[in-house]
Image (cartoon, rainbow, N blue to C red; front, side):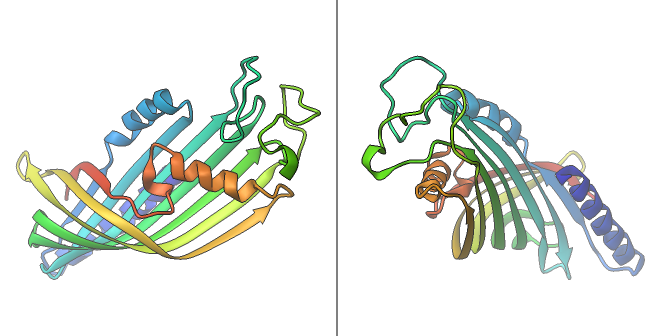
Length: 247
């Protein structure tokens, strides 16, 4: 679904760029993908034991040869499972055998960028972005009790948790500020971008469907300790890399 949405969006923007060129207005369109996302997902999976998949892409089109704007899309899926070993020395901060916790996340951005060479959108840039993040959390974990929060439940079977599925939807709005550089190579058609930025969220809403009093705490602990920091609640600097094509 996410790939289909990006194809439609790219087609609409490409058509807009062609219309502008027909009107003798200098317009350029640059589409990029994140080439690091698949390989970093594999590395993070090996390092953390959390099954991970990620994808990222962006589109920029210049406006009046002064600046550019366009959407940026990122999605990630993270699945953590409890240790299936027979070791009885478990901690609550670890996942018990049989527990599962899956996150499906998307981040949408609208970027406004000011370039060293605005007519071709290359060179140094400063970027201001509006962010929207949505995370769907689905967890099958043992319901904790205050008197035995760090112990296995009495009815522990080692196969599947005995409680219901904990559902959480986390939506956030925020702003981000970034800087970077873009090069156009191979007859000015291939683009290579590198940048750094930081985000801050000013609005957040969390919907919880669970009887577990610790469901939100378990969810927030997971997003704040993932190797990928895009979902963390605290502001963390983020590096970005893009490879694409200039139309």
